[in-house]
Length: 387
Image (tube, rainbow, N blue to C red):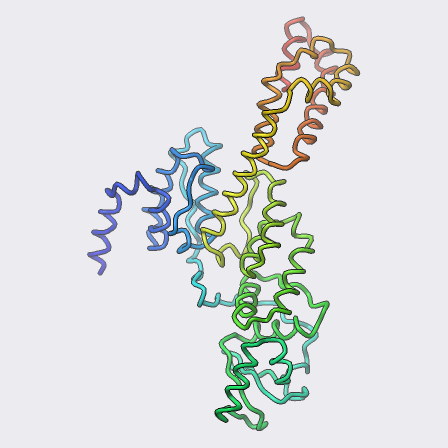
């Protein structure tokens, strides 16, 4: 098989698809684990603006982490004087599987809940036992399981009819589940406690979200979604909220997170834990939305009267305060280009006012520039250098 793989790798470098459909080839090669070959495919996308790259089905087969590495590479290339010499950052380790029927691997050293002692052990009031995949028993009420999950309701009914339930020393019926003890504990705790601490670990959240949807636990799902919508992370780390909303299947939370991301410069987007548990297509949809918003905001902006925007706004008053009549003839083209660039990078309404404030601060420096200039040429060139 090694011989066949080597031949395929050689052929891949000569495929016309590497030039005609580089993004598709990038996803295919990453999925194969051929990260050195994926570098060539990523480089071939440089001829297409990032906002014009169309999504391909193969992005569903790689993780959001893999696609983020591609985005980071493309954004770095836009700032580089030699983009053709930039390289992809290789993943430190393989991302976990993103298939819908696969649970993420639990991380070591997870924080244990502090208030579950005695709640699910043998001293608890219970009539059924849930046994986790790592052989930890949880003593619970069957009626609770039936209420919280229609899937558990069916399993309890089926076990009763077949009379085939396992029993343990306590003589209580035993139900084996696929989830590990950490995931199962949090599922039960979230249902019992309104003030349960939010899950900080990305791997654990992914496992819990997977189990919530698997067992159709609508009450717990709603609680997790409410936490996302009301979380302070929505404004501080919207990408992290977006990732978790995708895992929960919460469209409302995902849309709110996507909108909040518009206030952040795309060049400042940083990696967040959990990207490895969504697909590359999930992240591509987010970027498509962002670029559409940028185009829409720019379309509205270019229809505005530049003279009305800049002559009748706060900048005019500020310039008057500086006593600089010559600066009232500033070229609208410079201001328009500057504002359009910022608006496209951060397509939110307040970006305009932020640009205005930024220019206002710059104009505040005019007096010191004027005083420090020795010739009339320097005094005239000062404002334009400042812009």
